[in-house]
Structures are given as structure tokens and as C-alpha cells.
Amino acid sequence: MSSIMQELLAGSNIGQLQQGKIVPGVITEIRQNEVVVDIGGKSEGVIPANEFLDIGELQIGGTVEVLVEKLEDKSGKPVLSYDKAEQKKNWDNILTKFPEGSVATGRVKAKVKGGLIISIGVDAFIPASHVDIQPPKNLDQYVGQTYDFKVIKIDQVRKNIVLSRRELIEQQRSEKRKALLDSIQPGQVRKGVVKNITDFGAFIDLDGMDGLLHITDMSWGRIAHPSEVLKQGEEIQVMIIEVNREKERVSLGLKQTTKNPWDEIEHKFPVGAKVHGKVVNLVPYGAFIEIEPGVEGLVHITEMSWTKRITKPSEMLKVGQEVDAVVLGIQKDDQKISLGLRQLEPNPWDMVRHNYPMGARVRGKVRNMTTYGAFIELEEGIDGMVHVSDMTWNRKVNHPSEVLKKGDEVDAIVLDVDPSQRRISLGMKQLSEDPWSDIDAHFKIGDVVKGTVSKITTFGAFVELKDGIDGLVHISQISEERIDKVKDHLKPGQEVTARVVKIDREERRLGLSIKAANYSAEQLAAETSAYEALNRDSSGDMMNLGDILDAAADKK
Image (cartoon, rainbow, N blue to C red; front, side, top):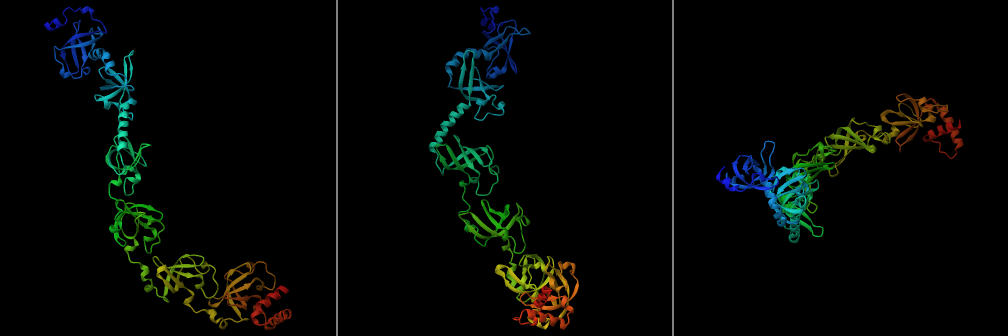
């Protein structure tokens, strides 16, 4: 035995070594992960190196006080602990130094179930919920770190100490929040850290309290989500917009730290100027074009093309596409700019008077029909309209479908041109003379004519005669016998012979009688005489022959 050991253990009784006592020991060997200590027993004990704050400060031959946990383990060696000896010696000092409510500095020794073990001279426990403001997902990151903790509970019987770092942080934040609320003013620019991002904005840690940065105050331009502008943990400069000291709320702005691009908008983008931008959004009524960060203009669907019939903006544009446009108007207060795409090209309607002079003969295809007329496409985007009253001389047209159908190629005459209203009036009947202007030269009462049945109705049949003039055979004038249904006697396309009995200039229609087609002059005279006998006040001229025949039919 060395002289040092003899001196250290002089007078001691090896047999008096007891479990649970603190005894002196001599360091005989320092290994990488453990320290060998001789306490004068049968064998030397081994202590894990992590029980010492700094193993580099130990020296072979140096003395340390250790706690005897067991006199012998299975291999006959004593189980020793330097850390527990220190804790046992320090316990009374700890109670004096760190009463409940005090602040202690400690090092995180290890992670255990539900929290961490902290060394403050003795082992103490901190629950995971008290480690930080937000309970951390991974406690391993704290092991080996040194922090300040608040002593919140001491159990002297069980020798347990419970700590909290969260309460200390909350207390510090409360003090900082009060100081911040006392000094903060709208208009100030402060540094902050992005703490949390939501769909409607972001919460910014101002080192003392959180402020809300709403999505509308992040950028002068359009953003769909705050994550396009900010990242969690990022440090930013924000402006204080509003402070509510009673509710301890602060509203922040990011875009306010930069110049509003709308302040000098009329100088940057004067009306009539050509601009370049990117399509950022499509809506049913148009497209929004970003012409610089924070400045968007609307191209209304009606300003996209002079000639193309656009029903939705996606027919011409897509999001992300870069386009040129012309500034049409600026509403600075509402932060609105009207843009046009078609203004980049000449307006074809400016040439309409030249291309389609009044009186010119044109040809086109029936593109569409309404109740009042038909639209004829003369060229792409340029339509002329034929009103129902200008379709034919021969009869009154109630709907264009009586004369035309979609897709028909038709000729017409230009009647009027109004470029400001983008309107060209066309006429089809003007291609020929009006036969009704000299109808007496073509048809007289009593004439026997031939024609083709064009339409069957409940009250009679329409017959097309020469020159396209229509005649109407009333149901009473089809046969001498009573008829209930016209279709039982006449069919469309059937050729018939009839006598002209009326000339209706207002309706542009002739009254015909099939049954009177074979009447002799004597028979007609007899019918007329009978009619005159019943109506002595009647003039009896041939213009009333249709009435005479109708009256005769009723009499029979």
C-alpha cells in the first residue's frame, strides 16, 4: 500500500465501511469512460466518468469523497457514486440556497420518462410541459445544456425538487410585454421573428409579445397564402399599425415598410401607355394582369378582342402568361387600372364604312337568329342584321325561321352602317322590286291561279304563287262540303288551282278559293246576287268576293 493511502486510511477500520456512508477515496486510474477509486476495501470501485463535471480536472492520486451504495457487487467490488455523495452533502445547502420560488442555474443531465433530470447540486426533475412555452417534441436537444430554472416544489421527505423553465420564460415575457406595451407606438418599425403562419396571416414575436400580421398587410401585390412571403423562424422588419393596450393586441404591417406603388401610378402608367405584365388571375368577367409588384390591372372580357366572340377569358389567356396591354383608365383611390388587349391592334370597325358602303351587295352566312331578325356574318367578328321586316316583300314575317335557317348563305343589301354602335343593317327584300307596289298588274279579283301548298294550319292553307307571293285558302273555301281538318284534304307540296277572291295589301296576302276555281261566270254572278239580296247596303264590287263566298258557305 502506498504511503498516501496509508496516511489517508490511517486509523480507519476497513470493517467499519458501511452502505450509505460517505467515505474518502483515492483515484488510482482514469479511463476514457470511468474513474477507478480505492476506498481501502477488498477491491477498488469504478465510477462512471459522467458523474464528474470535468474529468480533465481529475488527477491520479487525488482524493474524492464518494458514497458507498453497496459494499460488494456480484464480482466483489464496491459500488460507489461521486455524484450521490455530492448530492447528499449538498442537500441541506440546496434547501437554504434554493427555496421554492427561487431561480437556480442547472445543467441538463439526462432525459427520462415525462421530462428531464437537472443537476443544481442535487438532482431535480422538470416535467416536459415546463421545459418551454410550447412543449418540445424532442427533449434530447436539451441534454448537456445549462439554463436558469424556477424552483416550484420541494419534497424534503422524498428529497424531490421540481423545476420549471416555462414559468421563468413566461415571467420574463410578461415583464417584456409590459415594457413593450408602454413604449410601442403606431408608425414605429420593429424587428420581429415569424412565430406561426396561418391561412389568414402570421404571428410575429416582437420579443415580449406576439403581433398579428394580416395577409392583406403583407404585400402591395396579390398573394394567395402567407407562406408565399414568409417562413417560420425568419427575422423581419414590421411596422406597428395599431396598438390595443387593454386587450394587449398589436396589428402589424409588412408592406407599409415599403413605398406604396399606387402613390405615383398616373406618372408610371399614363392612360394610353403600353405596358407589359403577367396574368395572375382569371375571373368570369376578365383577367387580372400584374404590371409591377403590387399593381394589377383588369382586362375586361369585352376589351380582349375586336372581333372574336369570347365567352370566357381562358379562351385567350392562361395564368402565368406574359402579355402586353394598353392602359385605358385609372381609379387611384380604388387602386384599379383598366387595361385593354384589343387596343394593340387596329379596330376593324373603323373600316366598316369603307368596306361596306350603303347600297352595296354583300354575301354571308346566317350565324344566329332572334325573334326580330337574323345575324349574317360578313367576316370574322363583323355581323350585319336583317330585320324580319326586310326579309321579303311578299308577306309579313313573324319569325326569321319562316324564311331562313342557321348556316344558310344569303345575299343582302347594306341599308345602314353605325360604327359607334357596331351595327350594320341589311336587307334581303331590297335585292328585288316590291311586287306589291304593282300588285294589280299581277293579280286581279276573279283570276284563276296555280300554286303550291307551303303550310297547313287549323284555319286553312298557305299557297305560294308566282314571284313568291303568298295566298291563303280559308278552310271554308277548300270544298263545297263542310271540312273539319284541313290536313285531310291538302298536303304541303301539293299543287292546287284556286281563284283570287281577296287582295289584302296590309298583310301582303291574297285570299284564294279552291272550290270557286271551277265556278262559271254565271255561278259567280248568282253567288253575288244572293249576297247582295241579303246585304242591300253592300257595294257589291269584286273586292268583296271572298266575303260573298264565305256568306254563301255559311248559308248552305
